[in-house]
Length: 289
Ligand code: DGL
Image (tube, rainbow, N blue to C red):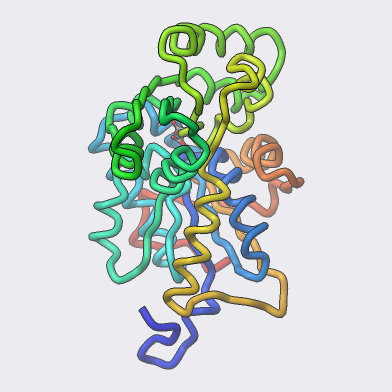
C-alpha cells in the first residue's frame, strides 16, 4: 500500500488501529507508543465480550472481524491485533478480509522474542486455553528453531487476577505455583513466553516462582519493532513533528476500562475519554472521535 490513496489523501497521517478483547492489550499499546511516539493510535477493547480466551474458534473469529471492521470504518492505516488469542485464532482471516490493509498480530513477535533469548531451546508458552489449543505459538517457535522443545500451558486464572488488580500477594503466588510448579520441575524450560496480554502484569510473581534461571519474555517490544518495520517498508511511518494522539474505544464499562486500563497503560485514563461503541450495530458506525 502506498502512503497516498487515490483521492490524494495521506494514508500516512491516519491512526494505527489496535484491538484487544479488553484492557490487557494496553500493555502492547504502551510499547507501541514508546517506540512510535509521533503516531496516532485508535485502541478498541471489546470489554463486553472479554474473555476471548475461553471461547470457540468461530466466536473468536467473529468478534475479531467485528472489532477490526469498526476500526477500519473509522479510518486506520494498519491494524495491530494486540490480543494473543485473536492473533492465534483469527489473524489469517483478518489479513484475508482486509487486504491490502496491513494486519499484524502478537504471536509471531512473541515467538521471535522467545527464540532469541532461549539458551537451549526449552521454551514454555503460557497463555489462554484457546491460544494453547490453537498451537500458533508452538508452530511459530518451531519454524524459527526446529530443534526447540516447546511446552504450552493454559493459565486462564491469571487473566482474572490481573483484571482484579491482584497481581502480587499470596493468592497470585499460590495460583502461579499451582499452574507452573510441575511444568518447571519436570520439563525445565529456560524461557517462559508470556503469551497473553494480561500476564506481564504478573511478572514479579512469575519471576519469583520461575526463578532466576528462567527468562521471561512477552511480545510487546518485538511487536513494536515489527510495526515499525512494517510502517517503514510501506512508507507509512509518521515521524512527527507533533506527538501522536490516543483515542480509546470500549464495548462496555468505560469506568472500569479507565480504572483497570490505567494499570496496563502505565498512565492515568479518564473514563470520559473512553468512547462506548457497539460492535453489533455496525451499519450505524460510531461518530468520528
Ligand atoms: N487478550 C487475551 C489474550 O491475550 C487475554 C484475555 C482474554 O481471554 O480475552 O489472549
